[in-house]
Length: 115
Ligand code: AMP
Ligand code: ZN
Image 1 (cartoon, rainbow, N blue to C red):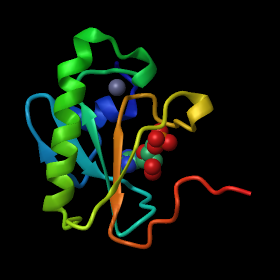
Image 2: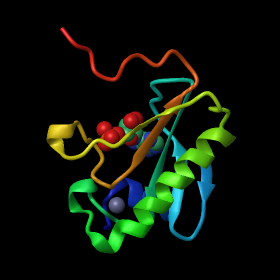
Image 3: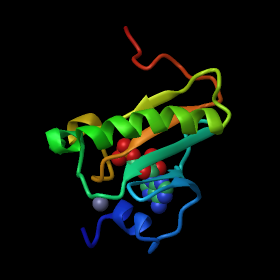
Image 4: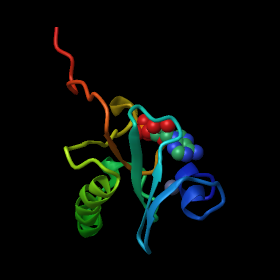
């Protein structure tokens, strides 16, 4: 996808603060962090959101979850971390290239505020 921001980052056309890279995925720090540690993990393959995921993506997505946990530990989040996947406009997604946010290291509030 020529003009997709995260495709451009994965091709190295836009710089990022890299956390991890292999043939299939890239992890980099969020430009506008909401906690002391906030990075995201993306597939190099363009997948707009989780809503577009199909059976063919299952092993990649599973691998990403396992890797998210390993990278969180490596970034010092041994006590735990939050993973967030915003999906579609109704889910607050802003960049339409699938990504998993990995967040932690601070005072993480309850995810959903009730009342
Ligand atoms: P989402 O709302 O899940 O689509 O999140 C998009 C995230 O991308 C936001 O947390 C932004 O701060 C982050 N972001 C936008 N542009 C960049 C960039 N150039 N490098 C790193 N993170 C970015
Ligand atoms: Zn993309």
